[in-house]
Length: 278
Image (cartoon, rainbow, N blue to C red; front, side, top):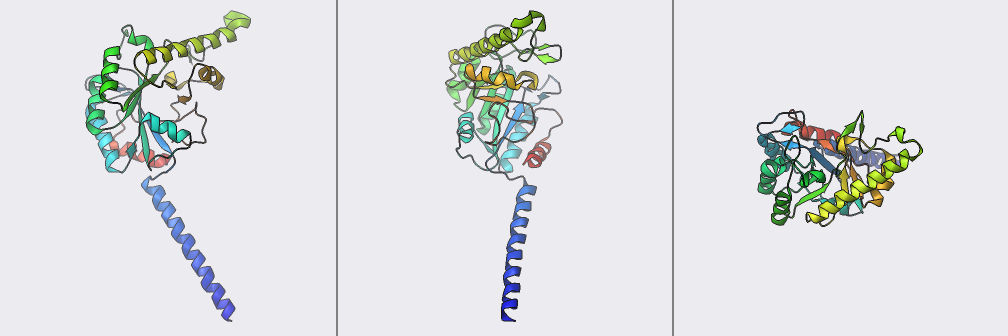
């Protein structure tokens, strides 16, 4: 009888511990807490007059960052992200802010807010526009890039191709293979990718970027056949537009991001998106 009572007490103790662990796990999940992961946010254009599906106002951008800080998110630099991918630690609820395209609005509107709030950021830039004006939205110049990096070591510039940021049909210029070239089509495509990426990397170095090793894919379009070519040109990390949080288990050239740069994404909505992905 004593053994039976003892067993019941022991079983009740185990059930109590299991219930407490489950409750803690559910509470952590519902609050959006995450560890050993990084939420990479994606932006494009911050402007108070221009409007588009990938343009947000300075107020919206600032409010997002302030709100995330109030919720306990920790903004990290690109070099901390690299260390994380190589096995290092990052704070719980780590966030990396990224921009695509290298618009001049990053310098004019986003950079002052990032500097004010001490938030690091990476801008994936089209390096062809460093040396010639864009026919549409103005892009960053050498002067602006040097000024930001000299005054704020938390600002980093990386590759968004040199001259392949356009579409050919439904494909990106990075993924398009011209079948009309016959047997040489694949080889010509491979050479073009390596040469363009190498040009992007060299111009970044010329601009003062110490460690150019990352790319974001134009329009989010890519193929796994690009990976060895990008590696050959010196790329280690590739960022997509697929939603999700980054873990160390993922392919370093197929990293997900969370879109934060659309008009409808309020600070509360962005927090909810992160909680959902966590």
